[in-house]
Image (cartoon, rainbow, N blue to C red; front, top):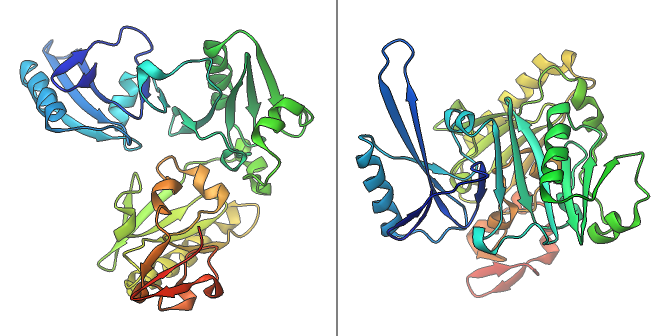
Length: 344
């Protein structure tokens, strides 16, 4: 159900298609095989661009009370596995409001899999959002291009083709490295660099392609399912063929946590190097910063637009020229009063 103010509207079709500007209630009733008892779960999903108020929260609580349970709040990109199973192991998230979205619009969707779940996310139409590791659906005029990156696995290719056919009849399949001459596809995307690291071609044959994440806090390293509280935390990410230490914009002073992250990354690299085609490198990204292209697409929850919205910081934050955001040279910094800024 779409929750808007005090209203709840039932979604009768494409129940696994969400929109990032809405609040949804997902109600699932199941019967226990052993006891025969019926139980109900109510999830309240909040899109990253929704304009939610207390009204939506109260409506979700009202719905859950009606079913004799408590609502479970879910943020976009942090969907629990049991909810995803209920949705058929496939979640589609489109941009904007449901009533304004049309399959005729020019759009770009990336198809990624993680632990048996297929995620189809609409992205801004930009070649920088293209990645050799996954499959894509690109809608241009009346044509739907289904592009298979060299690292795309079978489940992603199958889901991309099915989703493409759901958008229209004129579907054109493109294979990276074999159909790169399609002029319309590349004219729409542009000819700038995209995330096409050489290691992606190993992905279809790799034993484990799921990235692993740890948060490093109070000198402890704890595995987590998703990246959360990015600005205040230090995270270590194993992207299989690369390791990243992500330092939040408010975590720069956590030098001990950064050192621990680098040490743990080094130890992990030693353990896995023999199973990888080469020794994975370790990178450090200090936020706010542009993100390496391949890292940005590897994880759904890494939203670069929310990370680099600002172009000025307090002078104290940029005092160390060795800890500047990626892509910012000390010569780019200008001074104004107590703050420093960089050209946008």
